[in-house]
Length: 208
Image 1 (cartoon, helix red, strand yellow):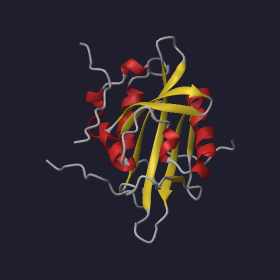
Image 2 (tube, helix red, strand yellow):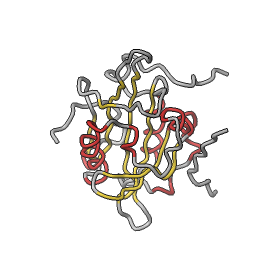
Image 3 (tube, helix red, strand yellow):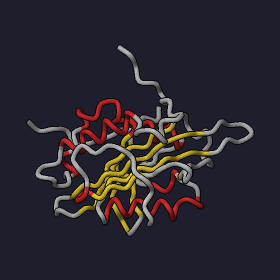
Image 4 (cartoon, rainbow, N blue to C red):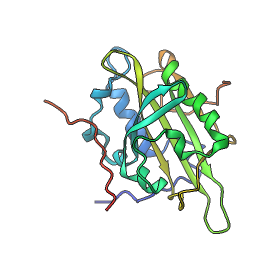
């Protein structure tokens, strides 16, 4: 059996199509839609996510454009070099990109919409460039409010230091697909806008 590489190749993929990890997670999200409705947080089945699980997260909205990681996969710990659970998703990003991230993230909650962003961290004297992608997909809570997002963050290598952060690559297309306008099988990127019981989704970070 072929093993998934620890950090998958993302070269050229960010401008062509979603990474297979993101496609797998999105296909599961689409499979949970009933009559075009947004899936519920409790519907997400970790057994159906497979190799995407270590890269996946669930966010809880705490303010406009701000969401904290309620669960996070092991690979996200490896990227950031610390446990990201309880931290805002903006912790992965540099200060100059956090306001732009907040706009895109709020679209996922408020439109609601599927949002995907190409990412990078520039090369430094001691470290290679990092290439990545992030995907946000809305979920409803027990009250039917869109207060959660399921998604994934993939990079081709860890950031290498706790001080290094990701940026949004504005040279490549971003994706913004409002749910009310999106066909159930739509998986292609678009240009950036102007503005039986199943187990709970529990992604355990092993610091050992």
